[in-house]
Length: 118
Length: 119
Image 1 (cartoon, chains in turn blue, red):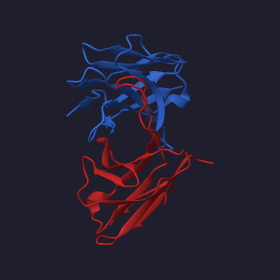
Image 2 (tube, one colour):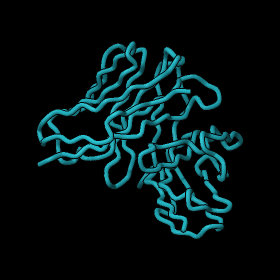
Image 3 (cartoon, chains in turn purple, red):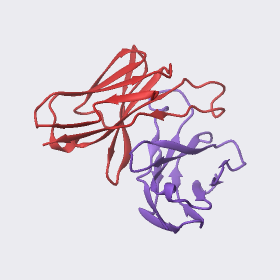
Image 4 (cartoon, helix red, strand yellow):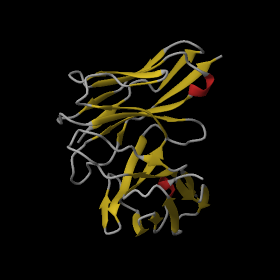
């Protein structure tokens, strides 16, 4: 079974600065999907960014970008120009692309709580 | 209007009571999921359904049951609630995969969550 590890339970960043959240995963598959979800205090789960393993180019969405290192099984999230609204729990998630029991589920890490200091 | 809705948003119940959490979606997706979130544990899958006639157990299905009444509705039941089922419950939906494995992906869209407290 796949596992997802977020080794930083909490992090903080100064407003306008850059922060990187770490995520590693364990899998024997060669093709898969990776996601970062944001959960603000409203508790809504919001997709921030996604990456397909077969793509070598790192995904970018405005101020959010990832550093995908397939060989190292690492998928870190970089938030640039941090804003107060970025304060939230961030979850890394893995999904297998193949059909079959369990393949469509998301396997989540335990989350990183990000605080943004004004 | 929200694409994925959950009712109730908050619920307090007592040990031994039967409780049902409901999820509805207007996205037209075939696949629906129920997750549970506990502090420090992330989200874990309880049940998932690929269509009305296809329901599958997830990682932590013991103590739960589900019903897919229609493509748009997926309910989670706790037959006899116990305190360690106190958690935040999320429903999610996704479209079917298209293309070859590894190509394309289907985002899961989450409902707003139901906070359940079992006393």
